[in-house]
Length: 82
Image 1 (cartoon, one colour):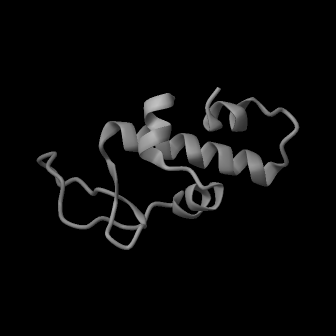
Image 2 (cartoon, one colour):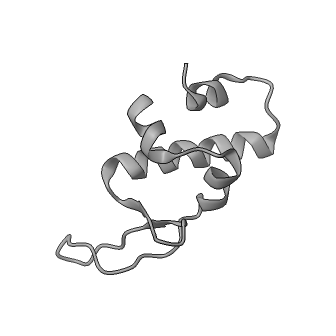
Image 3 (tube, one colour):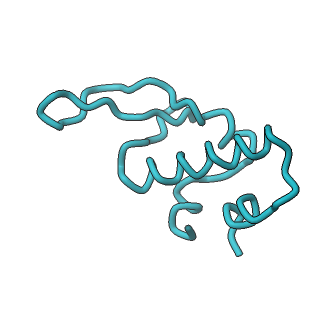
């Protein structure tokens, strides 16, 4: 069982932990789709697309950046297991 499954399956989580779980699931989905990446400073960022569907340069820091870092999850490893 992976860390992500453990977080999601825990039914006795507080609302803050539930929000963190949703953020982590969103992070894994964006990582798998290729929309998220990790910069040299260790922050997770989400690529921004232009109208033609190509990615622009550096994107904004992801809204779920702190939740993933706080949980100590490596998205590359978690995405393989999820």
